[in-house]
Length: 248
Image (tube, rainbow, N blue to C red; front, top):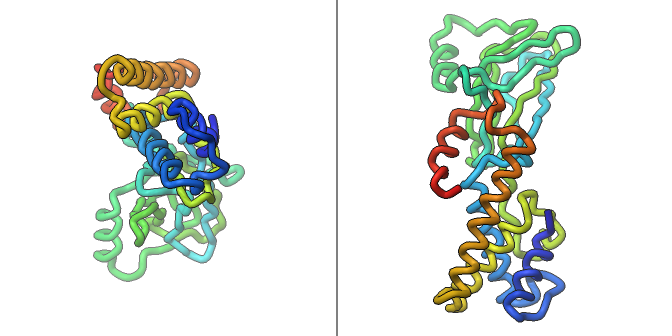
């Protein structure tokens, strides 16, 4: 893994340009930063990287509060599920009362609540919840079907891709979580293409290097984390693996 600025400078060196102290040092450095973001986004869409799997802990209050903001999620986040059934990786981990939780469609929750005669009772250990989009569309929240009368500790597991990096200097030292080599080579390919150097053998070599480095990074992630047969892969992941099988 490397920082945004390190990858930008690595691309600049390969293009026979001077290194910079910040992506804001020149318009061209910022353009290379854009290519780095593009390359990262490409990798985001090619594979479900283990480094993006995140544990989110939520304290459920005893006053009946039903809505909880999952502030670390983004618009590309989703809750991880088992492939062999519909259960999410979500648990009540309150000491001595551990159990698995069950999510329900948000529309079902709203329908049930709106058609309930009176106010739904709060429970000592609620288990059903829904996921709903945040009002700004940039993340998700968790809503209980029925509130709790006791303080609970809930834990859920999410796939949460890293946001694009800012090109205003604030993210110069931010580490890009995905493997460095495929991002660097893909950004270099985009930069060479922009300069008109994509024609002929040099462009073909960069294209091949970029594809091979992505495939190698995927294979390492799959083998090291045993993602070919693990039980908490999602149906979406299985589908995406099939879709990119020709690419690999």
